[in-house]
Image 1 (cartoon, rainbow, N blue to C red):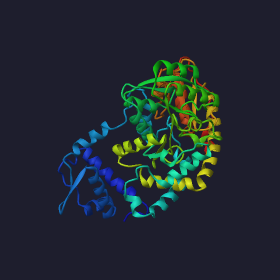
Image 2 (cartoon, rainbow, N blue to C red):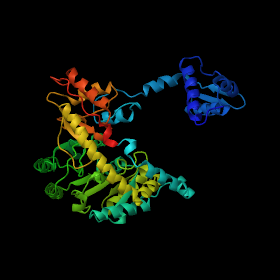
Image 3 (cartoon, rainbow, N blue to C red):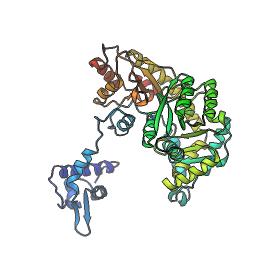
Image 4 (cartoon, rainbow, N blue to C red):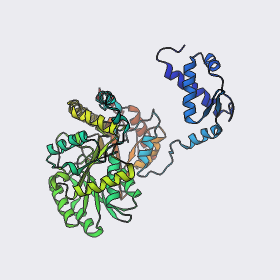
Length: 486
């Protein structure tokens, strides 16, 4: 019999053996697999474990069951190893706005990812999520099986309206729509307001997926230089007059990737220019809860006249239980509701929104964020010291969050550094994936929460010394950052 607690591992072992035999062609298409009892006896495991393994392989399409006859290798099994090989991450792909996303999401389990855009699992509120999942599991069947409503969970929308009111943003119930994710929120706005060939203004640098998404909408992308207090306002005004962009997409709080904070004076001038040139602004507020104190928000200053507020919970709660939102003019929200119906048939998952609402409604979330901000501040200081030991300097020290926008030593190209590091299973975020003008080759975005393993700094030091950076020399050993999160 299987040892206690080992059933799942044994099942995977059986599956591995069968896959290996098919890959080695010792089992070919149409061949019959050993009977359940015979294979169980050979492996020294229970028949139920073999049955589970066979059923999982059948679900994968590697084998198929014949009633009363047993299990056979499927006719398409010979092609499966080739297809899986073709699905492996392409490390030679162009270093473009998709590069960091692809390399991070497709990374091997042992890869280190200081270039990714999310927190490690140990810093997320897993206990709060588990408690919420248990609560939702006891809900009525309809919550678990039905489609979501057209505007999303009423409970979560009420919580969001209360949060908006705390920051002075007066939002009516008919001005708020829940979406499947923050990315879907931007996508819906783009579908609603843009047509191919329109011009869209973004910060330079900006979040790389803004560029990727706008490219998919076939619009012209123009960048405005970003400063420590917001977009360079004189350039912003000149671009509006010359290019007549239809949208401006930005972060106000803890700007991605720079970590900068929009100043009140820049915000006022920006809104005046937007009104003069009939510009709509999409303000992505996904990092708001990482701020120690709230900074100016375009949506609150504008009252959702020309500004559309979007956000999500993937950075602070869970990237697995996804939900986003759009706060905008009521007439625009009506159109966005229809558009979401046409593209997704309803709002986000009722299970996901119920879990998020349960977490936000309790006091545990605020306590979690208070503790998280303290941990991030320590990690920011420790990572800065490690970067400086390699000759890198933060462009500025953010008020919060988990990103540092770092200037590399003179002559160092971040794309070349990222390619070299990737060969050692370290995923970096090179500067030009964020830059419309391609003027950020000397910068790197670093996630301080993903930088605790000293092997990262060893890999970067060696890459810089191997002529990736002109005149690269060995540097002193940086500190071990793992203590930052203890």
